[in-house]
Amino acid sequence: MHLLFATSIVPDGALGSGYEIANAAIIDGLRRAGVRVTVLGFVWPGRSPSDPENTIVLGEVDVRTNGAPLRRKLAWLRDAMLSGLTFSSVKLRTVGPATVRRAVEAAGPFDAYVLNSVQFAGAFEGVFRDRPTLFIAHNVEHRSARENARTTHSAFQRFLYRREARLLEKLEERLCRKARFVFTLAEEDREALGVASPARSVALPLVTRASDPPPPEGRTVEYDAALIGTWTWQPNRIGLEWFLHQVVPHLPHDFTVRIAGHLPGDVTSSHPGVKFVGRVPDAESFVRGAAVIPLVSRAGTGVQLKTIETFELGLPSVATASSLRGIDHRPENCIVADDPASFAAALQLAASGACRDVDGCDFYWRQRHALDAGLRRGLQALGHISLEVTA
Image 1: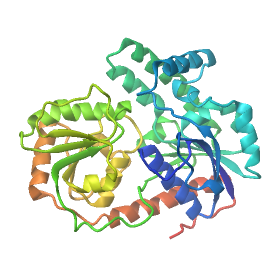
Image 2: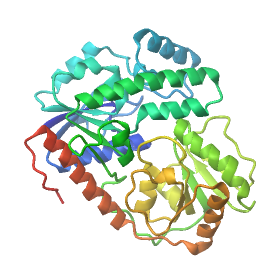
Image 3: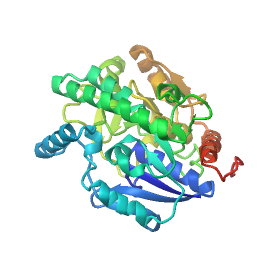
Image 4: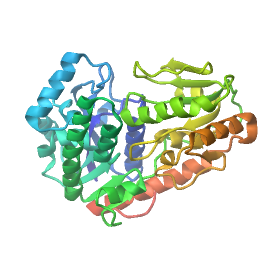
């Protein structure tokens, strides 16, 4: 079986975001099932695909809104309004549908499309009507857009998010209706997308690495807590601001917190123990330097990849209930707390040594076996593949 994996950004090996980590895990799983996968999409500026022999690159594109010049933002907004596309999809219209169609034809004979999330599929929806499709819903995007509208302080952004929500709800309904099978990344998203039947969808557990995680021993703790993420993404920002404004004030002044990743310019903290360290060269080494990992999701849908990575590494953690979306097995060294004061108290308890590292291999292999089984259920909907799980 040969599948064309249509995605906004092709894998380049960097795995700099949860979206990229999820894509790598799913593509690896499809290939473990014996499927030939050709990837089609754009690449970040200055990057190259990690698997060029099996990748068709449409060009370079930078889809980040935060930090984009005002002129570019206004052009995106104008094009979105004129085309009726979502703001997120119109950013990918640096080439026309005819160019994408020619690239599809260049992929050679293939059996079906894998439409990876809504952005690329929405930008070139008419191109992908000639073959069966599998749809990967990383999130329930229209719900996330509505949450963003409720939490933003800008009337203009509220208008944009509400527009996105209306368009995304219709787009997700069309993609799910047309798909032979739908993969979500959290169980509750199946019902939210109207595909709760086992014959229509499955929630895929994910992994963040291709092999066993490192053993828990042999790490040096340098700070009490560490967070890393793409904080310019609104659902992530909501969790970070909750942590900084409601949890951190309950922490003693000598409790040290390090926050890595790209931040909006107006995110700050007056707590003397909080430091923003920007981009770090090795994300895994950074989190392994913390006594405890705060998992602070408060919004959004889909799964939290930072939660999965933390559990794979066996690190002590304190998690909100939202951070555990899509997780069937919670390690014993994870404390759940949603009240800010309770969250802060749990962080101090875990950092004091009350929660110890565990071996994350059991969690990793549980996830990977379940991922492979879920992918095979979707592939069976296309025919010509058995349900036997590859070890």
